[in-house]
Amino acid sequence: MLLERTVLVICWTFAILLLRFTIPQGKGRDAILVFLFKQLMTWIFGILVVQFGLITYPVREFPNATNTSFSFEYFIYPATCVAFVLHFPEEKSRLHKIGWYLFFPTWMTILEVIIQKYTALIDYIHWSWFWTWITLLITFSISHRFYLWYTKHGSVTTGRYASQSPHKKSKG
Image (tube, rainbow, N blue to C red; front, side, top):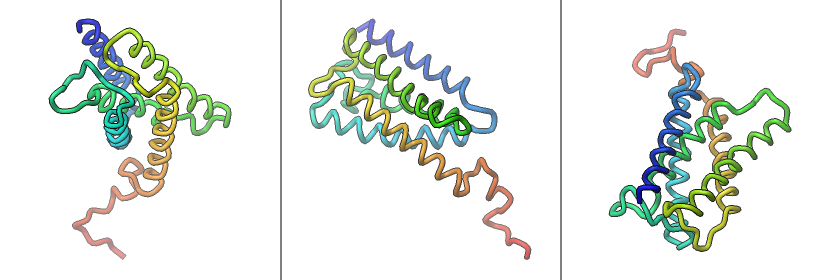
């Protein structure tokens, strides 16, 4: 159990540092938006894979509250998605963008497989690394597309509606 707790502390530290050093100045609200959106998806998928007996989490932070991994589903994956979305290479070539999409699910899947193999944090029952990779790719893609849609249609960050207070009448 000490190994599992140590791995969780390392993962939490990594995620906190990732958030600390990858959120650009003035993008805090965008980071929260992406974090919560990804968290919503991982919450749903995490519950489904556990309920269908595809994965178990033998060592959990809140064993009486949930059968999913609080750390991975509610913090580590969403924090990583923030870095993915806010630093997405929008102005780069198509090949660079594809590489970005492939890089994040790949390194995260490799780490999950290592954690699954050497700790009791994750136990694949009817699951494989491939399904982890695919779900990460899909949820990162959906998060990125949601972020682009949201910022195009009046995000607080863009300042599109910042000058209009809901309590003031516009002149004109």
